[in-house]
Image (tube, rainbow, N blue to C red; front, side, top):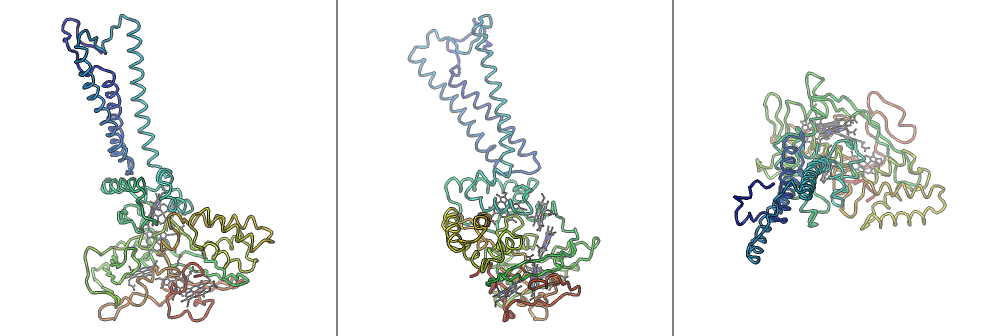
Length: 494
Ligand code: HEC
Ligand code: HEC
Ligand code: HEC
Ligand code: HEC
Ligand code: HEC
Ligand code: HEC
């Protein structure tokens, strides 16, 4: 450590030769080392993550600054001490005489400790990097604000896709944006400033081409999907009422299949743009379509004020229909229908559908209160039910997976745009009111077979009698025509 010979050692050895400065030096170099490592990881990794940025650009420099402060502080302290002791016969702290066994031992101890420290810093930074990449970090560390998204995510088809695959994506372009919003999110969490519920859509979400389309490319032909929507009416017998239909999803690439059906919007050649007048993109008074030949058609509703503001125009992508691919907040109707159809709730109990939907939608303040409320009411109303305990547990499970009263997050806060029953969804544009200026062309609307073909519908056995040619929709009650479905259907009994 000491390179000077006895003869040229100055009268005043360096002020940095003191334990405080030495400690500062070790912390500082550890931090610098961690910074370089994190910086390299952050730059080279295929997916970047704002939280690594926080470690690399906030935490590591924080320790570096602390190290520097200690080095300087130690030197100042040393100077004061020397003034007091008149700097006579100060033995340089860091001189090591290898011929003295004790000094040699101290030196070895120092080298081992410093080496271990650097090694641990390296390991620590690498581990922290992995941790902050992980779903656990996004979903659990930030527990309260992220709970609704984390829980719903775990029950979605994307439960094995990491948060950053959709929210940050790959490549460097969106990197800075994600970093800044990540910093803000940590700040908002620490200071309890986050909104309840968290707002959607996320303005900084990366375009679908760079996230969804990494795994589902639009050229892929999906074809027709056969779906059954199992429902139970809110009557005494919980009458089953199901609809089975072929959804004409189609495809977007002329070389892989016909460009038609629902994914026509995603065709490589078609472009659909729109303007929404509300932050949630639920009211869309203006739509512009550009076909493969470049011909442009503009559709407007009577409400449109006529001003096409360029900065408000959005090009339609996957997220305009699949806006809940991962955070699926089931409506109480949907969740109870599913439990009934799976036999997890017993459809032979009178009015159980209606009761449970009512019970789920009470204004609870906390999850705990809801769980207690559910147990109390069910125990009172169904005291002689053979499976009372299982029923309570099932209703609590449904609540826990879909309702988050602390964050005011449930189906009411997050519209799902994929269909048209409980929210406007497709009918935001396909409502018969979007017309060209000459009123000659309308966005397809009242043709109930444009998007799907009903194969079977109704109560009980009716659902097993398939009609290949398709059926006209029969609604369980009269008087629905002329309205939009979501004028009456809201997802609950209200
Ligand atoms: C399959 C892709 C995908 C995955 C995986 C994913 N998200 Fe999302 N997330 C979305 C989309 C799409 C939205 C809605 C964006 C919109 O409407 O603009 C969203 C919205 C959100 C919101 C805003 C509130 C809301 O519900 O709309 C938060 C917070 C969020 N996600 C957190 C997470 C967390 C935490 C994880 C990991 C546990 C995660 N996301 C995983 C796609 C995903
Ligand atoms: C990292 C890869 C990955 C990314 C990114 C991704 N997904 Fe998926 N997605 C999957 C996998 C895996 C499945 C499950 C496949 C299956 O069930 O056949 C899936 C399933 C789906 C399904 C079918 C859901 C169902 O009900 O079965 C839809 C719709 C979907 N994804 C849309 C999206 C959208 C929209 C985005 C962008 C916000 C997205 N995905 C991003 C991998 C991904
Ligand atoms: C116009 C609305 C719309 C757009 C835009 C759209 N989709 Fe779809 N997509 C649908 C509908 C409706 C279905 C049928 C499934 C359903 O209802 O859940 C579907 C089905 C799918 C499926 C198959 C799901 C399954 O269960 O097998 C995948 C995967 C998918 N979409 C991915 C995408 C991707 C990726 C994009 C963007 C390139 C996209 N979609 C754009 C409406 C849309
Ligand atoms: C932002 C507006 C908008 C939304 C939202 C929207 N569409 Fe469309 N859609 C259009 C326009 C514009 C056309 C082309 C005009 C037409 O065919 O009437 C179109 C055409 C279609 C077509 C006909 C494709 C063909 O073969 O000609 C289908 C099917 C379709 N949409 C299904 C859906 C479904 C299903 C949804 C909801 C999941 C949906 N659309 C949501 C604007 C929209
Ligand atoms: C623009 C395309 C489009 C048009 C037009 C359309 N639908 Fe649909 N419809 C859909 C899509 C997409 C779904 C699937 C929603 C989902 O996967 O959750 C659906 C679902 C349904 C369902 C099942 C919903 C459930 O939860 O049980 C019924 C019933 C239905 N449509 C009836 C109709 C009737 C009646 C009309 C005519 C007035 C019509 N649809 C017009 C796109 C359309
Ligand atoms: C005037 C109000 C009204 C309109 C409009 C309406 N419905 Fe309904 N619908 C009802 C009522 C009331 C029931 C019976 C609810 C119950 O007993 O649970 C019902 C039941 C249903 C059911 C079976 C049970 C359930 O809860 O899902 C389906 C499926 C359905 N409607 C689909 C549609 C579709 C699709 C549209 C739009 C094309 C539509 N409805 C428009 C009032 C309406």
